[in-house]
Amino acid sequence: MQDLKPSRRTMITLAAAAPLLAATTAAAQAAPDGPTPNHPPARPPAAPLHDGANDFDFIIGDWKAHVRRLPERLVGSTAWIEYEGTSSHQKLFGGPANLEEFKVTSLDGKLNIHAQTLRLYNRETRQWSIYGFDAAEGTIGLPPVIGDFRGGVVGLFDQEDWKGRAIFVRYHWFNLSPLACRMEQAFSADGGKSWESNWICELSREKA
Image (tube, rainbow, N blue to C red; front, side, top):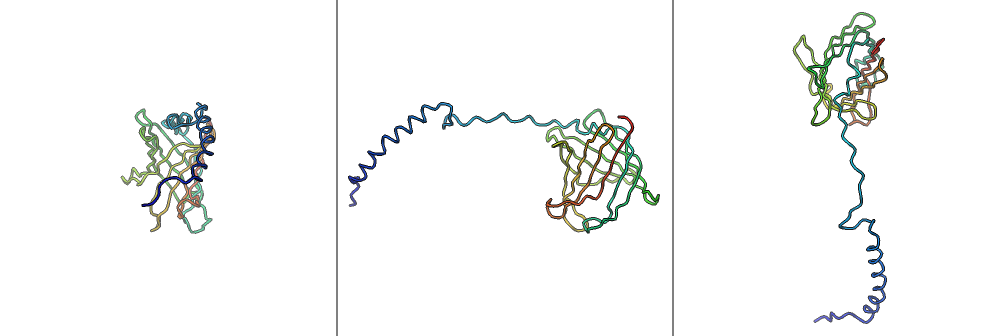
């Protein structure tokens, strides 16, 4: 049978280490403010969640609209078409929802865009969903872009197909002043590594 008794060398090593172990234990017990198994490190209180029910209040009312639209997307095109017209926004049913009616005509008078947008706020997730729809045709665009207000910008995203390609879609709303705001739509075909803007809408008005 193997001899399990500690050797003399082992006993000397343990004896030498004992004072150091005792000192370390005493130091830990003497530091009540330090983390221990029964007293984990203190954590700062979590920041309150942002209630975004009023994030789109800045857009309510009537605006003049100037639009730059890139029809050929994700092919390196730089042939933009410009439009001018109006954009009107109103709250719905007294809740965190609003409706936009959008009418613009290309500067050469050949193209018209008449569209509607529905924005809904989910109080549970604290996010907005934006749906484009066509009241005349009875259709609604799906999926919606979904997002919230961060860093001074309302950012909304979705994933969809564009001409057989899976892409990400991004909306950014910028509240520039009571008399100006801007919306940009961009596509990404590489998982969000790069973005191509294809719709820039600048809204302005003389008084809020």
